[in-house]
Image (cartoon, rainbow, N blue to C red; front, top):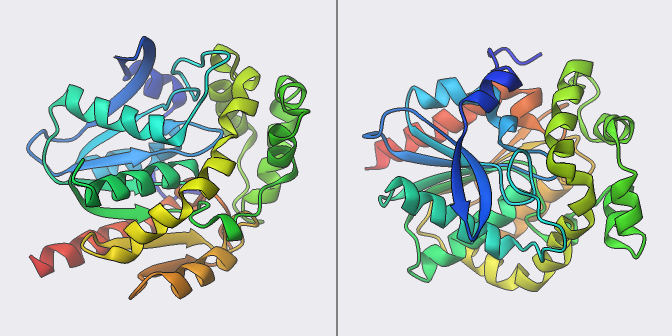
Length: 297
């Protein structure tokens, strides 16, 4: 399906290192030459940085890669009762960069929930709190008005959220992924097992109703984040799976309305996880974006 060789989850996990972030254990990964330009990869909800495993090797041949499982996700700590926040996840990314001594202009590649974290970093760039060199978004809720959450997301946000989270299981994950992946790029049973392993680790379903608070937080930050995207100065590209019911072609149409000189790539027949469903295409369009930046220098 991918056209690129991936990394087995067991091997991926074995490569991780640990960062203490405000008393919480965070798993992170690096690859590539330390002298290369840093590229921060930010994953989505409800999965983890293993989402990037098809792209990890080819991108690592060119750039210094940095990624972590954010707080509440994957193999990182999932504290109960925690007030999870996109702003705190942006703090985490900056803490990881400091820990690694990465101070230069930063390129960002983000997906889904990670798009919101990237939008926050972009706003902080304009506030002088971090220096970004570029940002590429994959499918995500860049604008609250175009985000069409699936039923389980709505239920997690409701008063039933704690119960819905505790009852979330591999079968329900498979049912939800079947709806958001493209019709011809569905995940295999083995991939679903691995995704579920990451979600279930550290009793992840018990905090899903707390993580989902990112949806109202996006609405609070909408104008600030939109202003940051409209301001210019940081090259942006959107690479989007068109048939994603959550943030597919309809979101790209809104992006083209709101963002000056929009740079968008629409992937036909691809769903919500283009880096899993069509990683070779994502790689092609990402590298073309970076090559164009080099020519401008």
